Amino acid sequence: MSDQLVTVLDWAAILCLLAGSLLSFVAAVGLMRFPDLLSRMHTAAKPQILGMLLVLVGIGLRMLPVEETGVFDFGTLILVGLFQVVTVPVAGHIAARVGYRTGRIRRDLVVTDELAERLDSKRRANEGSEAGPAQG
Image 1 (cartoon, rainbow, N blue to C red):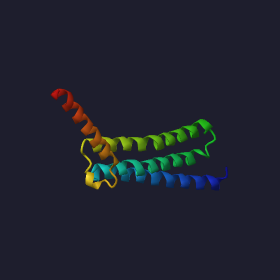
Image 2: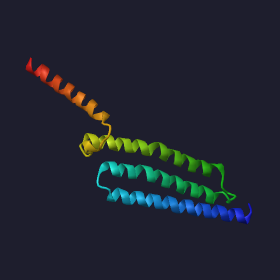
Image 3: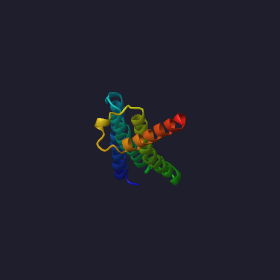
């Protein structure tokens, strides 16, 4: 590779690493500063994934000019990125459901509350099944 291309790749890698680190830092500060669970979930998921992906792209760009870098190294970066993209939204969804069921989320903040109907119908069914046999 030419020296100019290596320099451009280095600068692109530096920019990606700095942007990714900054996004991850902002996400960490948001986790500590935001008041409620919904805001914290948003901060934990969206900027964290983008920050991680930018760091991985920066690492990949930095590894391009190195002759010893193989397919295994780039494959590992891609797998780490895919794993993050798949698991972080699932973890956020689970945290939201747990927070909702334990009463940590104010129901007036939720625009569309589909879970309330399901939980209320289950609660009514459980109350009906407990009262029926005990009185008979």
